[in-house]
Length: 388
Image 1 (cartoon, rainbow, N blue to C red):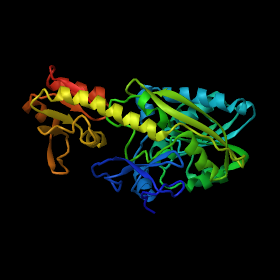
Image 2: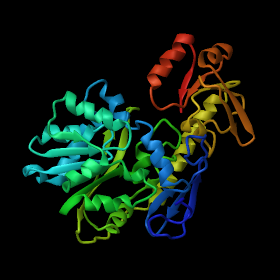
Image 3: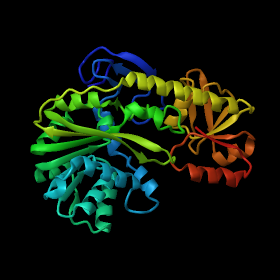
């Protein structure tokens, strides 16, 4: 079933917030829209169907941020912070031997920390993508005998569990039926921990990339109120929640919302500040920042842009830093021709493009920015570099 303009939580009519446009990537939507449901205090992305997203996530390891920040260490600095906050919220839960499943464990960074901290409990992980293989190798390398990465069938057979974790999973789901499975995987009165980006604090945790928090992969933007309503609709009662910030690749913190629910628990309605107000503040802030960058770029006859991914497309519209540029060459090793509206850009091989044009290089790629900078400097040590 395709998403549409109706709220996926309650079916209500919704309000337009933002239109995005992206290049082709497998079967993911290329022109999604961000819409707001007032009754649920919820933002979501229109278009796309779950099977296409499932195919996308099964095809790539999308949890590399932990490896990038660890600097070769098998333990992630993100998950060390996450463990501390989660253990505090669980408040003595691991005083007894427990069985825990991380559903959508990625590279198993959090499971590694849990298995080390609580050796008498058993930890299991499942992820549909290649990142699960990385997680399995980590557990073996660290000698964690209480940690096991399995396919979904094996995880279901080893249940039920005292705690199921869905960390940075639910914001990617178009279909919420998986909550029925999470409920079935738990013991009676078992706990569900859900962690998502904290949508109410996007404006306080700035990213270098324009409108970074809105894309076609994060298809849900929750306030505590809306996430609690979703869990309640699938047989969970609200227990508690907390906000925290974990380290991120650009040196600034990333805002996270953690929520605990109990299977069969009493339904509790909670309220949250307006996610629409917070989002509008974030968008205004982003446009002001982009305007300042665009002013610097306009001082040059043209620009070179390194990368033609989603960040590039975001920067070209909605008042982004590249939205007013016309004299622009895209640097990419792939022979691309990029068409956006009535504008057409051809890609040049990076070394050739930098040597041919004296313009500054605008890097729109998120991962490996230091490596890209080094490559540019090797070609031309004096070349001006911007990050957007």
